[in-house]
Image (cartoon, rainbow, N blue to C red):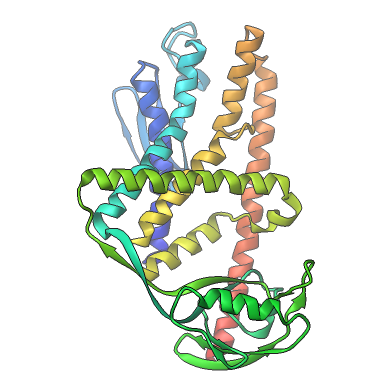
Length: 366
C-alpha cells in the first residue's frame, strides 16, 4: 500500500501541474481540447463542451493539449483564442502556470501538515545514531551496515541519548584513518558487532561513507492559531525552495561528483514508499519536496520543458517574431528524446539496483 500511496502522490503532483496550465488557459478564454493524466492507452475519458478529459494507462505523466497542433481541429487558424495567436504575456502565463501551481501546492501541503501533525517543539533522543551508507561501494556498506541501522557504540564508547552522539561518532571515525574500529549496532531487532577500517580522506581524516542522523522522534504541539500555521509553513517552504535551488546548483557545478545521485521515478517511489511505511504523515513532506523539485526542474531552460518554451518566448520578444516552426519543433523533439532517454536509463538502472537489493534480502532470510 505504501508504494501505491507514493505513486498516487506523484500522480497528484502531475495533475496539479497540468491543472495549472489548464486553468491559466481557460481563464483567459484560450482553447484547450485535451486534458490528460498519464500517457499511453486511454482507460477512461469524458468529452466536455470544449475539452476531452482522459486518464491513461501510465499515470506518471500528463499533458494539456491545444487545438493549435491538432490537424483535425475545425477552429480557424487565425482565431484569436488559439494559444499561438495570443500576446507573449498571455502565453507566458499559461506556460509558467504549471510551475506556479506546484509551488502553491507545496506551500499548502506544508500548512496542512502543520495543522494535522502539529508544530515541532523538541526532539526526544534515544541512544545511538541512525546511519545510511552513501553507496554500495562505501566502507560502511562493504562492512555490512545498511540504511536504518543504529550505531550504539564505537570502540567500546556508548553513544548517548543526546544531540552530541553524532559528533562523537564522527570524531572517532575521523581520528582513526587506516585503523580498524569496532562498532556495536542495531540491525532491525538484533544487536551486532562488526569491525571496519576508515579510509584516508583527502583532508587526512578517516571516512567510511555514511550519512548520520539523530536517533529519536520529534515532539509536536498544537499550533496556537491559523496565522502561526501559515507563517511556519512559509519559513519551511523557503528553506526547501532555497535548498532545492542549491542542490541543482551543486549538480551543475560538480556534475561529475553529483550525477550519480540523480534519482528517477523508481527511486522516488521507493523513497516515498519508505516514508509512508514509517509514518503516513511523512507523505505530506514527500509531496511538498517533490512538488518543489518538479517546479524547479520544469522552469529550467531546457527543450521540452516549460522553461524551454519560455526561452522561445524571450527570443521571440527580442527578435520581434517567433523562431521558424521547424527550428522550434526540431529543438523540442531533440529535447524530448533526451529527456525520455534519461528517464528510461534511470528506470532501468534503479530497477536493477532494487532487484539486487531484494536478492540480498532473500539471501539473509534463507
